[in-house]
Length: 354
Ligand code: F0G
Image (cartoon, protein in one colour):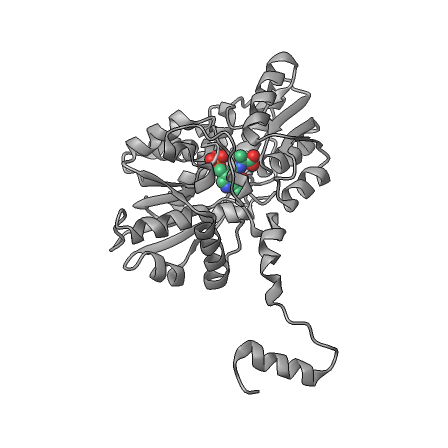
């Protein structure tokens, strides 16, 4: 039986990276495309909604797609240490793939603005974690300069090898769906992912989806058309004010006849809860931003749904950000250890008279 061997094994011939060394892989990719009929009936009436659940990658986010290629290239180039700035997921992914490759890894994360599961990952995989009293954008500027001045390989998505891995998600979507969707919806932060999807679709053929990008309202530089100096949102993964691949994102949006919009934190968390409670798919808040953007665009009449197929990319797993999930904890009921109390609580919880 052929087993899944990771993205370079599967798509290496279509990747512009060095093939001189063994791939650094954790068997990333091949994530499920899950139909979401109940949520779809609510947010895209008459259409078909699918969720590309990228949280099921080895470190819990889509970043692993680009990290297999970036780390393989770093090894081929003879790097001994890799570095990245990150809102969390890139850090965890870089740390894991560096461990796998036997390289040292340094990650810069915004002080106090990184979800617990991501920090836990970076620490567990043995990275040197440095926190910056500034934003992701400050961190990215610092690691770019540091990698020019010291022999350290930069593995942020400004590194073209990252896109070579990330573009494979577009091919998987088309293979799994059996066609190109009408719309592909995703959150936009540093804009590496939207750039990579567009690259993948363009390399795959003439039929391409329209792209729907969504940014958090407090961190929406592309929507506003200007840099945001103090980005703010509870969706910390996309708390970015000056995306590195801004120009490429605009090109992708224009060429795909797409759209980009801002959604409030309230709208993001609404989508986050709907995904988990209506479909049983638990993603991190930032990942729900594409769904929130789609819902808002349908409601405002920008996007027609009848007969159309929508794929929303859920970029990271819900367990990455446990604090956001347990914010609903006040709804929990505590009972003493006797069954009468439990039955009373069940009446309250279910509305039934048990
Ligand atoms: N969703 C999640 C869960 C992310 O972690 C990120 C980016 C994005 C969406 C946005 O993707 O930057 O390619 O537009 N996270 C980066 C990080 C910045 O450091 O983990 P993008």
